[in-house]
Image (tube, rainbow, N blue to C red; front, side):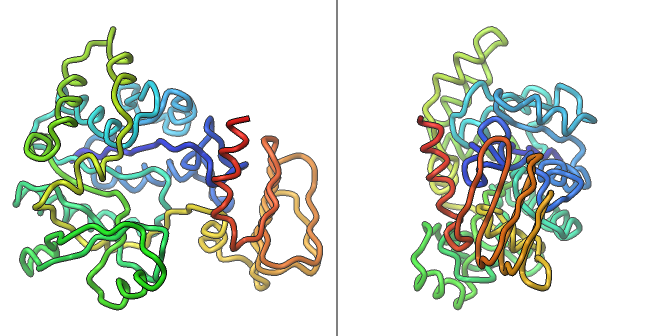
Amino acid sequence: MIVVIIAGGSGSRLWPLSTPDYPKHLLRINDDENSLLQNTYARVKQLAEQVYVVSEAGHIDHVKEQLSELPDSAFIVEPGRRGTANCIILALAVIQKNHSSDEPVAFVHADHFIRDESGFAYSFGVATAVSGQEQKIVLVGVEPDHPSTGFGYIKKAEMVSNQTLAYKVESFKEKPDFQTAKHYLATGKYLWNCGYFVGSINVFQNAMQAHAADLYENYKQLVEATDDNITDTYLGLENMAIDYALIEKVPDLLVVPASFDWMDLGSFADIAKAGGGDEKGNLTSGTVELEEVTNSLVNNTDDKPVAVIGLDNVVVVNTPDGILVARKDMAQKVGDVSKRFNKS
């Protein structure tokens, strides 16, 4: 089995901890000794004979430094950001040149927070076996534990068989409003779409040829590209997301419900939830002093100490790249603000 770790991202949603040059997957969350990327690699190397990492040229040096045990040949460098669809077909083009077209390939993301490594390995083992048996792309979807409006959903149809734990995919749903999300949760028929999927080169090629002709043409260009023209070839591709370019066009997808915990860590509120906090609900890192503070996250990576007094439900982040002060329940707005800084 081959695993491809997608290590991209703009670094906007966790600014100023993360930046375009040092995005989220490179961070050590809540004083963990390893970064999200390093923890992802630790999970996938349990189930894969070969691991590749796709990352953008702007931060590939940091990625290589964090995964120093991997050889240079394991790193696939995007010359620029062209969306997840082109990132994935670039990886498939490299794999086609170096491996059997029947070997299963699993795509995972570097910036997800998962604690249950054995459950993760089990779920992808099931997805890999089902993909091989059925010769179809198999997704791994997460059982929702609350009515989230921040994720897309996969609606399950009937089971493929009682032995496989896999379901046919009935449809995909965009990020819903709260009442719709409550309905999805209540039915038990929906999974969060976290962007995990498995298939061999042959399976992906057949799916692209049948349902995504433009993406298949891009794929052929990348397969035929040489070292001299790969950069120009890649930068000439239109920015596309894999969900819209391929996955949601394929009518016979399968999905395996995940047997592991999962968080996307899309905001500082998510980081606070993952860390748990102390008896007052506070989570701190660095040189920090609190007085009469509750339900807050305070992170200081700068030399200057940070003191917070008499506040509830706040996020305070101090780094050499910037200072953030926000209500914790509005932390999802950070990405919008950080993008305005990058435009100035």
